[in-house]
Image (cartoon, rainbow, N blue to C red; front, side, top):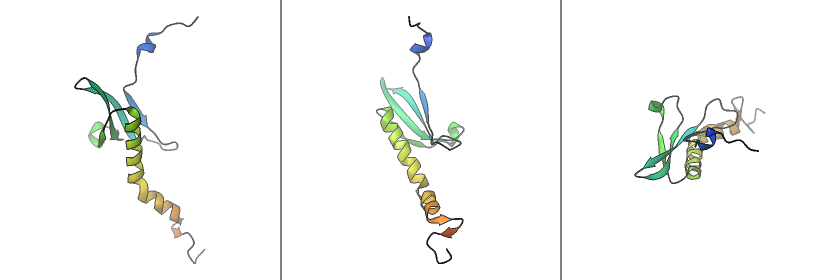
Length: 97
């Protein structure tokens, strides 16, 4: 017999979007009710609300997660490109290798 627990009534309100291997999340997604409708707000990660930047409001959690992920990729595009082109500060394929 399965026992009932009050935890079954709990619904998540906030999620952290995290990248494996990163010490901190990259975004926070929160479920809200605005004018009687449920929506999801995505913001960049910072330890406090004051340091977070609005990404946007979305009709569902999936859309909020996709937008937050795209924002993360856009903000880190240059860093990833530099890392893939260099190794130890030397361009790959340069004459010194």
